[in-house]
Image (cartoon, rainbow, N blue to C red; front, side, top):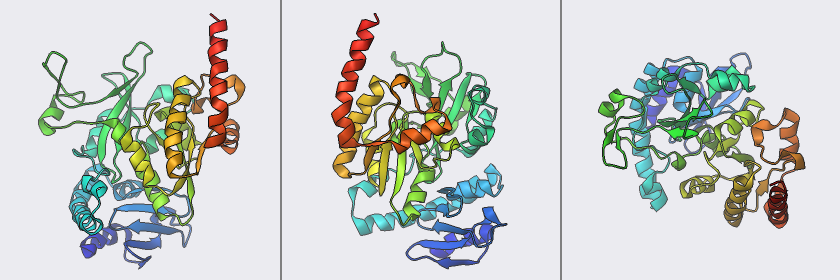
Length: 360
């Protein structure tokens, strides 16, 4: 099995690598060909990589993308790779005899072809106008559904499989604010409703169903980085896509979005697999603080390394993407340990309620 996986590595990255123990190999990073000796780690069993220079990380298909390999070729090559990784995971399942692994939460049930994103390969002008760079948006493969007038945010599983997409509204009157694209489904009256992707999608993926809260946005890049790290790193957790994009654009690569104000049980289970400190950086409103109180408390039961990013007093109702670069740094640097936050936030929320009542 390992020889077969290594053959794929050799095909695109060459044979100059060394074993790094267990299922990992190390080699010179092909992304930094001008920087001799820049190390790249690849975990053969999990199919993920991590560059120790610029800290780019993710599933093997993403590495091929960075090397300029066309999506159609990537899909062909990784379709060969995925069964091998799956077989190895079965072996690990039997060895660990762990029910969590038997459920395989890291793998989407119905992977979608990456070529699907070509339908949304349009510049998200509203985000550009809000200060996001094309480099950041392109890296995260954010596009536009021109027909439905929605900004498309792709959601991947840990292996880099496209699990689904979420469409954010462009016009303020659009409801819902974020639409989770589904396959053929039934409405409340039991009538068939065409897939949000189009009729072709229902024919190709008749049993498709996507629960976005089973995933953490950007987790497929963060997970291998923390997996290879020999030190405990810090993971920033935000609510939405724009907040995550803003942090990523300003260099906070270890950022994930829960795609809402409350973590699902699956998301908490995914976080429990990480050896990291957590900074909760939810929106500065009632829902955001209620989420940080509730989810922070549960995370704190598992690890003492739980912190809450701080907002200035005049930023009630704001979110991370409302900060300047320096503002982000200050908010993260001043993050409070969860117990201290818990003591002070209830009084703060009571004050906000009173202020809101007085303004009516």
